Image (cartoon, rainbow, N blue to C red; front, side, top):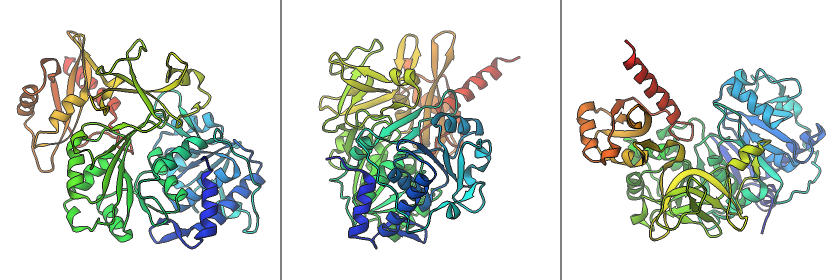
Length: 511
């Protein structure tokens, strides 16, 4: 049965007003306090003329006030646009113009990027240093209640921008129905009023939101963190006796590499979730062996479509997969001509479910480009990932379609080479990209991060890996770097690696 998440918070405020809803450092906001603050925020926006469906942007560092504003906008009937805090000024302004928000809640984190905002956007400052009207001055008094609004499952909930570093911004419109599906699909994962979710990813990330909203909808406590560090995360987990967490693979990797890891008591954990980037099988194994509680990997897109789930502890022989499709999630594979492929073949992953984006905001052609329809007219979302199903119906990811290296007419999946490189005792991290080749079209090049304290002999490692992979997969070059460029949720930025590799090739060709 569908429900509006903000209604659930009202219910919790009535039943357990003194129970902690949000925690950050020494600051605690109870459900009673959260509900009252949401009412004031919603009433203030309605006073300013907000109508149901109007977009409201938030761009700031992690804070309890950020979460309260997000929920207050929803209660007023608005659509939240959580803008990333790590953009160029041009990309930031492009996203703000694309969503056409008339309100911007911001702090000093984005001061330089937001300075070009025009007078048509009302700026409310979430701290005492950033430009705009002070939040406390903007807020109505505590006795004012917002008008109730009517929201349907199809009503827009938020607009999340998937990138924006180059080209036109893509604002993913997610509905209230989509968010409610996220709440209900984890209902059997130990969520409840005694759940304590430790969140260590940015507030604007979908990874954060699929952890935050189910926690609050089920009446638990969300412990927020600022900048992620391994020791700080482990200290908070032990102090608050965290039962749940949502992390991306690179965070898990750094935590497991932390020399102090074994000194912390993590016995309170029930479930640890992971999503957003490829998750190495050997890392999953180590987490299962050393960190109490279940480990659940979720594969899907911010755009929605099909979702796979792997309960790692129950299926230790399937750690090289991302699990099986959830009930009601139809996942298929298609070829380059958009023909559906039979079992055993590899192709682009497409998915259909009740959890699907409405589309990209104002981008009809972009929306059509990621849609695929089967012979009955059923709508699927294209993932851009290449995969195959094993004989038990578990999905194996082979790589991104755009990252596939075509060398001499053969498809080379970077993940195959990367997984082999990670087996070398001196390699901590690795990424493989394709570079132009006059002879083969493209050839693979690897970027490798050494283990702490290790020195890698490039010639020896190149010889080692090329003797382990197929003839068509052999590397033409291998570069040692301090760390791989990653997004704030851990995805390797292969575009930056390609630029580095191509620039190096050009320098080698120069007289």
